[in-house]
Length: 196
Image 1 (tube, rainbow, N blue to C red):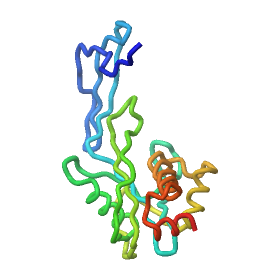
Image 2 (image 1 turned 180 degrees about the vertical axis):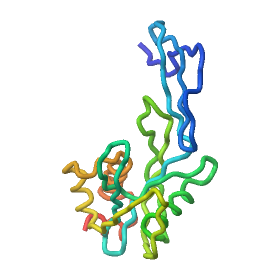
Image 3 (image 1 turned 135 degrees about the vertical axis):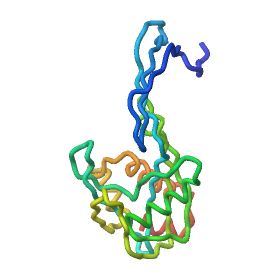
Image 4 (image 1 turned 90 degrees about the vertical axis):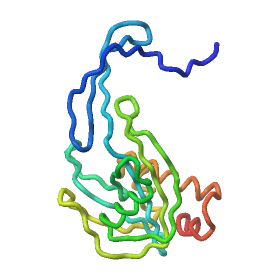
């Protein structure tokens, strides 16, 4: 039996529920794939998400720690943020890296584009590996109270394995970078920094 890849849902009506500068929530009255009436709520992200794995010349990753209001807990992550749709995501990632860590990078490599929680939101993240790091002064936004840690890549990866890093972008990016290094998909000097 062939797989169907089209939309099996029928949208009857759509109504806006809530909007702010970061999100727009809509509710759809639908017919489910089996033809039953129902509702489907969707959160549309107003911006693109970005994530950066910055590797310095000693093979260390800069992690950013901050309290995450929705989770009511502290979270260790890679430098992340958002950027306006229509702006090159790497430019937004460069800005976030500088704001959160004070770092700039000479080399940038796109490593992953991912959909975050795709059953309830259309939010997309564009992720990068950055190296050739130069350290400057961080300038976090007023809503960000950040703590920075510079750890060997192997330790950041171990933090994922131990469940100490649970942020989806950070987990996916750190795993992806390690896989790229193991598969020989990175420049040799960068692979040495990552794998030791």
